Image (cartoon, rainbow, N blue to C red; front, side, top):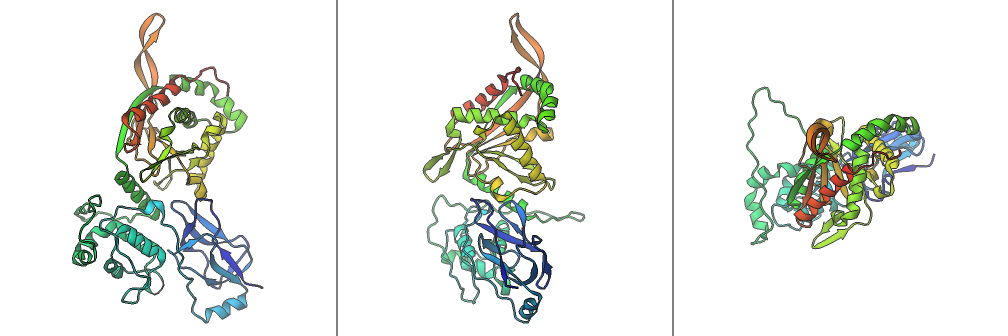
Amino acid sequence: MAQVELIMPKMGESVAEATITSWLKEVGDTIEADESVVEIATDKVDSEVPSTAEGVLIKKLYNEGDVVQVGQAIAIIGSEGEAAAESSAAPQQAAPVTAPIAETASVASVVASEKISTTSDSGKFYSPLVKSIAEKEGISMNELEALNGSGKEGRVTKKDILDYLPNRNTAVATSAPAVAATAPAAVPAQVKAAPKKANISINAGDEIIEMDRMRKLIAAHMVNSKQTSPHVTSYVEADMTNIVNWRNKNKDAFFAREGEKITFTPIIMEAIVKAIKDFPMINVSVDGDNIIKKKNINLGMATALPSGNLIVPVIKNADQLNLTGMTKAVNDLANRARNNALVPDDIAGGTYTMTNVGSFGNVMGTPIINQPQVAIMAVGAIQKKPAVIETPAGDAIAIRHKMFLSHAYDHRVVDGALGGMFVRRVADYLEQFDVNREI
């Protein structure tokens, strides 16, 4: 049979690269059409690449941990005879591929960037991607030389350099003279040294658990957000009594008609969309000294996974959905997230995020902004409380269903007035919910 290239598939307009995490087949293994050959990962989503042809895996073009651009060949599939011929020769590594750095892998630089050569004095080769990360993070050639690469012939891969970053402080301290010799005499004032790593004692019986890949990405993303955005949080307590009563009255009929459970999440998201239309400067991103005002309203919904990690699938053009459409979108993304069935484009393009801390019984939270957005809202658990209400006969105390809204925003571009008015407007829409609304 003619040899067939297994291509890194397109995984959405926003995804340009993926990392090979695990080969499911070895050279010489028989492969059925549509059978999975290799596991790949983008910033947060893991998936498998199926074979487009039946045959035998005769060559792997990349190693585990390598980053491959969409459209590049990652393996060769052929006949059994061709596999035997290939096995007698050493497999050739594909040429390094230049690819963009994953957004969530960024952390603050601790020294000024140094130009990294493709080949070092010791003869080690560094791919354009590794060079780019090193220069962005201020990693010197001396530091790179000290890294033990896991790639072919000890080559430093993207995974190696990203795994090194969280533990870099200790390594930098031991090689400070070399860094000082290569760095410019004056470091810009805005570039600050990373905080000293805490001295953690390990006692008998303590368990050391290495972070998985997703947890490392989440950790880097959260640190980057705190370093990027000065966070301010405003709080409002909303009266959810009308919504609770309406849902209790209509949830069974909704399920019978749509085959979907209606939760509070899509109702709250609907109120957020309305408030964004009233205050469009919440729906922005920051690019240097420019503010990018987003045309589309793409709502992210933070979702906890069975592993304990967190992922944020996005409802695109949420302002174009009615309550039924919003409910179906929320349920679909939540189910696919928990079943590891999201595609990379499902988590891209968000312009505002909501996280439901109330699902864990929490009444309030201080969420971290999902960069490059400038705001995020946490909704707490709905609780029955005694409250003063106004009636035609005067003030009275009644049992009401109350919920806290916590709105965290980037004080570079969102001041207290805008951030406070926005969360108040969301609460107003929730409290004014029409109890006679048709489903």
